[in-house]
Length: 183
Image 1 (cartoon, one colour):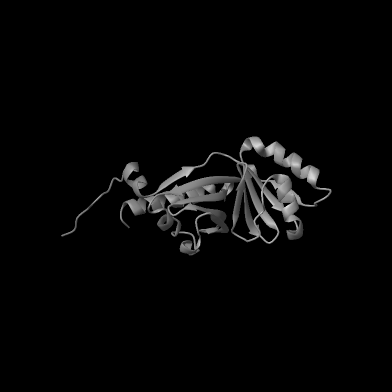
Image 2 (cartoon, helix red, strand yellow):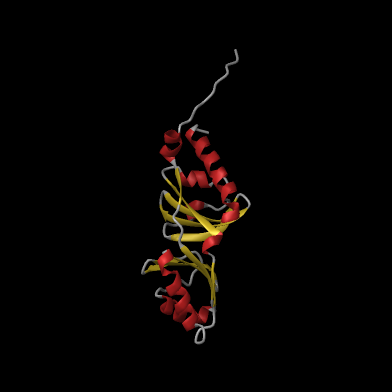
């Protein structure tokens, strides 16, 4: 005997195991500086630039993530934008570098809850068990380059280029519904 079943999963059911929230805008900068000069520039900016890829440093409400041997992502409250730009401009002569504001390029999502890691595995090839809390990496989600932050055992952030955000959000929501359905 065949049956025809339909399911009406409510938002409460879908978010019980994993929640997806768009984060408030922040100032974001791409920083390139020679590793030998990173400490000097970091002090000027008010934080230590981590020297290992994937490591994060925080100070004065600012966050620095090492993305490569000479590349960092700097995040700060929007109110700190002008101070960062001015400080970097003043430091340029003594410490040549490239600081590019990328605030409008990206949108951040918080993915949290007991099934957050499971949700991210639908489209992220990384072994998330190896991503320790307090670390972040550049990776892909489906075919989209993203920066994935792990803030805690069940708490992640995903920074995605604005133009790809609808695609990534749709995948996350489909996965969220599948998890709620027990799939």
